[in-house]
Length: 218
Image 1 (cartoon, rainbow, N blue to C red):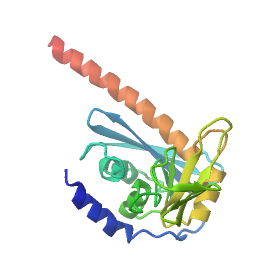
Image 2 (cartoon, rainbow, N blue to C red):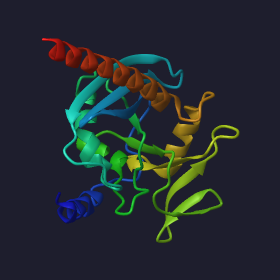
Image 3 (cartoon, rainbow, N blue to C red):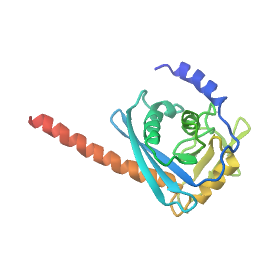
Image 4 (cartoon, one colour):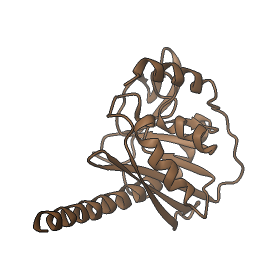
């Protein structure tokens, strides 16, 4: 695995990330989440109306993972499946929420930012784990640069970490995520994508077991 080469590429890509608002009215908002079966990545993308947050469309994609999991390089492992799912959508979203970090990343290019560049769509990073940064009064700094916000979304639950992905400012990212919180820890688009991908993972697992049993018996 060429980690040093990927680091150099991330540094180049990070220069393309835009952290100011480049979207107009939001009518459709989507969430994406991933699950795994062996070396395969399943990505679910769910599009909802905004601000009503009613489901409009669901699509999924499956792709082999090009690299194993390495912290800081999720985009290279999971993005191909997300791109496949996204390209199947008939109703493209105005903003995509990703269960991943945006610029709240060592090299300012978490998967949410990576996907924003690949898909040329405004993206927001929403993660349940903090890999880098120092939290000061719910603001998250990396090398004294404000890169994210901590949000407490549900009583007794761990917080989430919101950051700009691409073409969305941190202020707008936080406001949009807050408008998508309707009783769950995660914003509704990601919550729905999480439910969908878990069902897909179960269905694929059952299918694989059935096919394996047929092979054994044949």
